[in-house]
Length: 203
Image 1 (spheres, rainbow, N blue to C red):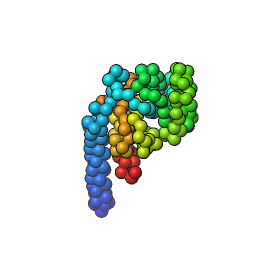
Image 2: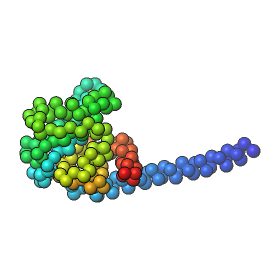
Image 3: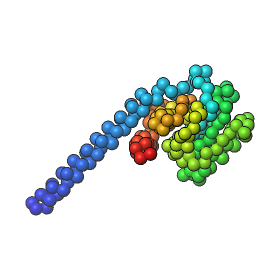
Image 4: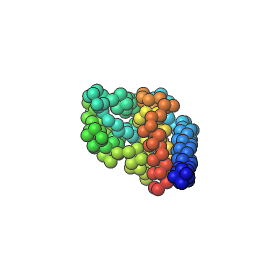
């Protein structure tokens, strides 16, 4: 009886705390999903013809190769999108913001740099930011710049990037390239949006 009473006293508050935590995290995820989409929807373009001209195309990094050695479709779509914008004269320069050593050991900056050069983008029109380990760092790098940016990535990613840009007073729109559908956010993106809230709170 004593043991059962002790367990009841300990477990009941613990379970209640866990339930409150689950409700809080779930509510925050849903709030992030809808508030970020509502805030950024009018600045995301998928049609190059409707996209306003910017000074710089901000190409956000991602891994180039999957575990089987094939090229990651999201990576190739971002490269193709950057080339398309430059050729359409929608951006004057391309700024690659990525990491030099991702979890797979790849140098994303150099991979993107070489692929843009192979696609015919002049070397003098490509700029490199090698501390873009996270989207927040990529946008933070642009703070105090007076230039207009077009962020190049998939739609679900652009929503977060543009939300950060607005909060950090960076002038930007987004060009959505093919990839995961905006309404199907991965667990990683949910967690990234939670971390984004914390980053914005402390900066």
